[in-house]
Length: 308
Image (tube, rainbow, N blue to C red; front, side, top):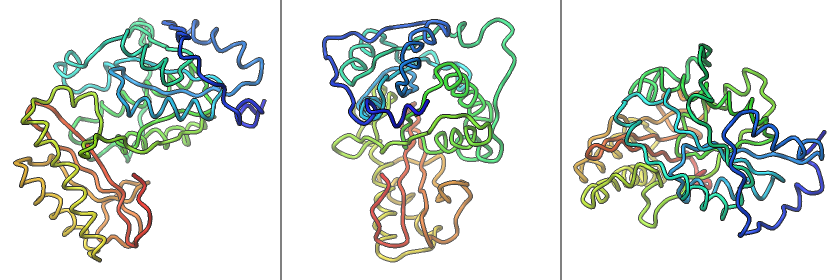
């Protein structure tokens, strides 16, 4: 079967705005939902989410709708990737709202399992990607964070067996870990990463933004401002990564925000760069009040079009 080259995949169907996505809550249920599609040679796209959908998630669903015959959206707040119990408990959950937004964006199936369905009694297997997970988010949140991400994404890919799975570039290190896992384990799913969706003032969309008080919301612009300041300096010809990082940190300080880290890395290996001689990825993480935010931007040694 070559579903990505089927006639229907090059001519995506028109979304029926009144049609409700089918909600399934079990592994057996989602596989049964896809059985007839696979028999017909249709392509399947997966958008893994933890719910609290916003325009960033919807852009992924819309991208899947454009290329795939059947679009599955998973909504699962994965407990194993949270390093703080309070963060897990505070994560917003609104199934009815998520279902309505997913329907409008073109989802066919919503897979909304309970934790006990994903991690059944006696579950003891995990997936760990070494190297990429040792620093930045892995260092701040602990190695268990990416172990939880890799394990749940591996399970979702095995459960749904999508032709394409869609992820956002805002979680750049996560996307790199998933790409490496898929390549290492020979999982037959194409991983597509889509541009970061931003508010009009540049703040990267995140489910966590809703936790920001009005004054914190203004200070949160520090992340995007820091990225853009370094980008401007690079466009002026600065190639020393230490100076580019310093410029981002200086700009963030003007918003009274101190970063957890600012790093300029090679986009695939995530190794630190000393000079920006080709492509680099500038990553920032910071707490604004009690809310932890991340963002990133591609930088280039020449005036090429940015990735974000």
